Length: 139
Image 1 (cartoon, rainbow, N blue to C red):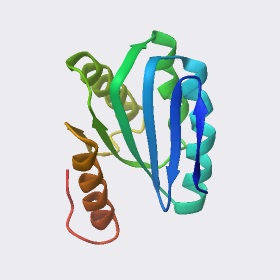
Image 2: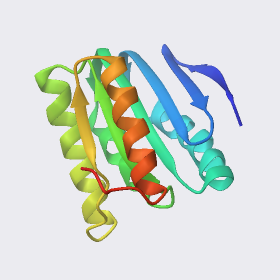
Image 3: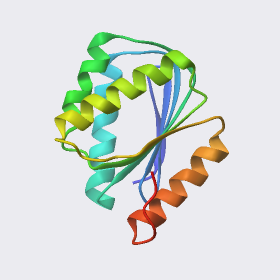
Image 4: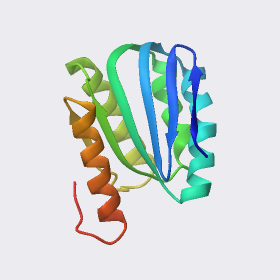
């Protein structure tokens, strides 16, 4: 699976073998978040895992219903999150969503990193992939 699609104002792209890149523009609704889950499930079925890279530099409001939709992701094997361009507020929201998912997954450790740039996020994703493929573990 490869290619990109627009969901609302957000750009969603699959970068084989295992990366989903989301560029967020404005508010994120629960419906938009749920729509992305279809693509994440397809990629997970093909690759066995999902590494999520988010550009949050233009993120608006994430409503409570969108935050609650994280409950619907427990079947997706996320193996790392790299978020770049996030404001302090966006970091709080993402940290909360990651914590909720960790609790739902009974302590599953999925490392997350906040980066200033896309280049930093890509380097981290590549290092995470190496670690998952038998290299040294990173956080």
